[in-house]
Each structure stands twice: as structure tokens, then as C-alpha cells.
Length: 361
Ligand SMILES: Cc1ncc(COP(=O)(O)O)c(C=O)c1O
Image (cartoon, rainbow, N blue to C red; front, side, top):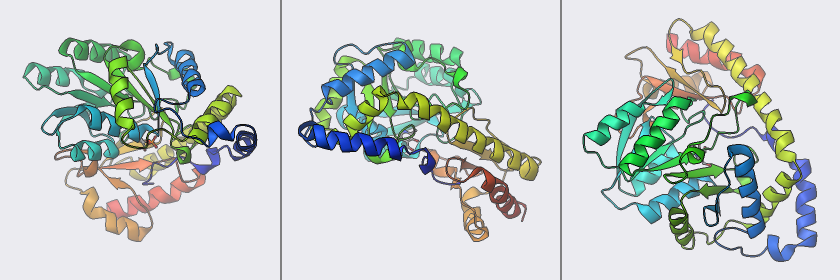
């Protein structure tokens, strides 16, 4: 239950087989060629259509580029905007990959507390009022990695307003946004609420497959232009084949058909894990209640150390990620992340039993 990999059962192999064969046959000069750094024009058009359909706002010219995944967008932000000694604010805890990128950029990371409704916007406001000057705030509003929590509607409005007032760029990572268990729960993206102060980092890794390495960056045109310039020094362009695969797949309506199936799968996994947790650990631990995504966040009794317990858990045949690497500073020793993306629904009972036997011992 450690990795955040999407379940291979969601990979659309048969549809892709036909699409790739057609692309190789009919347009090798596009799909196998270098592409513009900003992305193939028809793909940008498709991604803009998608933003409009799903988030109610269409990026204007220059407000969207294609990236080689969500992680690349974070790396491009670091490369083009951050200098050593700058401050970046993050949710505490947050995505390990982002923390590693910020560490490599030699910036100071200011962790802001979270609760069941996501980032505590009042806590951020207090820090800003106290003189902390972050160049940006990195936030994962839906089914956050690692906690599974979602930022409430009220806080979304408050956060955009606060960051606009203090001139802090919000980098909104929407990696799990489309992975709600229940389709009716979508809240407005931060980018749709504040396109002047929000850069959205999106990815097709969870709703399509990570192997294509494809995502997008949508935000203020001057910020997006800086990312596009930085991209010329990394891979110059996202792979043309993957770009056209996503476009063809999407325009044929496959996302509309396959994403609900994936939601169903992960929802069933979560229900199985949740029942097992309640049965085995209900009297000793607490955990978050995700409404989508891949993760729940477990709090162990005070004094129980998730790092020290890991070898015993491995011996018992169960894995998790300890809480500490998700914090920039101290924190997380009595917390851990469980993923429910990868095991089959029938395996959570046994997995949690093993974890419970280690915790009780
Ligand atoms: C919150 C978050 N952002 C970004 C990524 C990276 O996504 P990509 O595969 O698009 O680089 C992940 C992957 O696990 C993630 O959890």
C-alpha cells in the first residue's frame, strides 16, 4: 500500500493500439517529429476545450502549454521563478516530489497546517501578516497527496482572495482532480476562480497512463511564457506521439467513458480499505476520509513511530510510506500514508490485518 501508481487495469491498451497504429501510418511527420515547446497546436486546442468543458474557463492565447507531466511543470516553475533563499509555502504535509524539487532549488519551505478541509487559510494569512513573503504557494486542492483531503469551497474563495491581495502566485496541482469517487462532488478549480494568480499543473498520469509523460500548465500568460522558455533547456518539447495519442483518445470520447470506470474501481478499493481499517484499527488509529484519489492518511497513537515500524511491517508482508518525508521540517513520525490504488479490492482485508498485527505488537 505504498506506491501511488495508477492501477494498470485502467490503462486503455486496446483503444491505444488502434490510435497509435493510425498515427504511425498516417502522420509520422507530426507524431514522430519534434514539436513546438508550447505543444502541438491542435493538442493545445484540445486541452483548452477540455479546460472549458471541465472547469468552465477557456485559457486565452498564451495561457496554456503542454508539459511532460505534472512533475515537469513543478520543475519548470523552480527553474524559471525560484532563486536560492526564496521562500515557498506548502501544505504540511505535501507531495514528496514537490518537496524534493524545492529542496534542489535551495529555497526555504514554509509548511502551513492542514485540517480535514485542507489547507488552513487563516494560518497562511497569519504568516503573511507576520511578514513571511513566499514567492509562491504550492497546493493540491483535491484528494491531496498524501492526506486524501480536499480544500473546501469556502477556503478556495478565501485562498484566492488572500493570495491576490498579497501578490503570491498559487501553483495548483490537480493531479487527482478527476478521480472523485462520486462525479457530482467537483468543486471549482483555483485556476477557474483566480486565473490572474493561479498556475495550474495538470497531468494525464492518473486518468490515462504515466508512461506517456503528459500534462499541462495553465496560468497567467507571462508566467506560462517563462515556463515555455525554461522548457527549451530541458526536453524542448513533450513527445509528439504522446501528445497526439491523448488528443485522439480524448476527441473520440474515451475519457468520458473510461474515467467513470476508473473512479468506480478506486472507490471500491477505498470502501474495502475503509472497512478493514475500521475492523482492525478502529480503536487505536484515526485516518482521513478521502472522497477521491489514491490515499488515506493514518494517525497512530502518540509515541508510535512509523519510520521505526517499517522493517517489522516489511517482515509481516505489508508496506506503507512513513509520514516524515512529506514534511519539510519535523512532523509525521506518528503518521503514515496508505495507497489504495494498486492492490485488488479483495486484498485490503489481509493487508490491514498484517499492519494491525505489527502496530499492536
Ligand atoms: C500531487 C502529485 N503531483 C504530481 C505528480 C506527478 O505526476 P506526473 O506523473 O504527471 O509527473 C504526482 C504523482 O504521483 C502527484 O501525486
